[in-house]
Length: 179
Length: 179
Ligand SMILES: [Zn+2]
Ligand SMILES: [Zn+2]
Image 1 (cartoon, chains in turn red, green):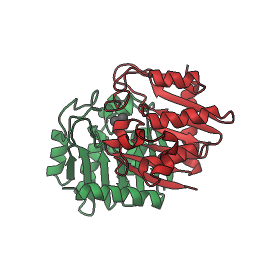
Image 2: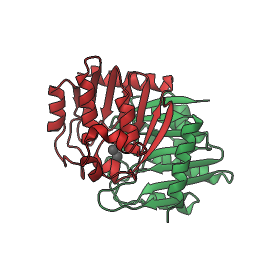
Image 3: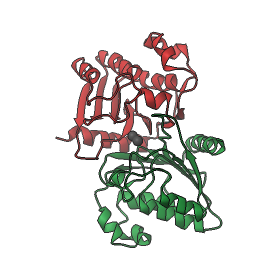
Image 4: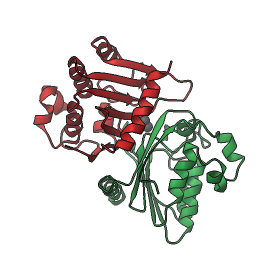
């Protein structure tokens, strides 16, 4: 099991095109060394709770994993996202659109819990982190968009340090309890 | 000494206005509990090297610390930044402008080493991390801009986990060795 890992993007071992020629379910087996597949594997390891706090999330492999996890009645998937126009979505499969996107609303209807944070003017809910089973934290500069994964330089840190997991969980719960 | 810490923004204990009514040098003493001052204190603890890899850095308290550190002949300050138009600068003291900004070029002339990464189209050098003395890592969603600190939700993780520090140092050095 991973206790600390760093993943750097853009992804070099797999292309977006290759992914969509494949069933997203076999992504991990397909190219286990790719940064993207390693990150998705960590998400798929979830057994109880997935808390996602993500400025932009539009890339289907991530949404697919969230959808699959939420089908398991033992797993609660919660998402906090930015309510304004996504600005990191260009180059993604969904393009620039108002958040929450149609796809996110679809996930919501299927059982993913959703909290949309809309702020004034230039202010953003700009976080990009996730907590798995209250014991593993993912953070960094990486938004879950196609452009962030395949075109831009981004970092993604994974840690099980309980002090950090606790601090980020508290922050997530603060978002969750906002009116 | 800090070995793991999480800071969350927007800053609530100090305002941008208060900062600039004060000498930036006394920031730490001025409001030590604020998130911003805690982050600046960590930067000021540098004794050998500060490696900054930051999509947008325009906020003067950060630039001021970098400038002060670079005056110390025992300290090497290196900066990797995005060469395209800064997109997280709105609301900052410098406003939207081409990167590197005049202020960054001024720092460069004063001894801060600078590497500007320009990418095609929508691709960005979107990282936001820093490594102090090859032993402490700062990462997260936080750009070093006024808007990021005072208006937006952002996270900032600090760790001395040697596995993570090593991985990020490698990535920094890869940027540094790019042609
Ligand atoms: Zn961003
Ligand atoms: Zn950004």
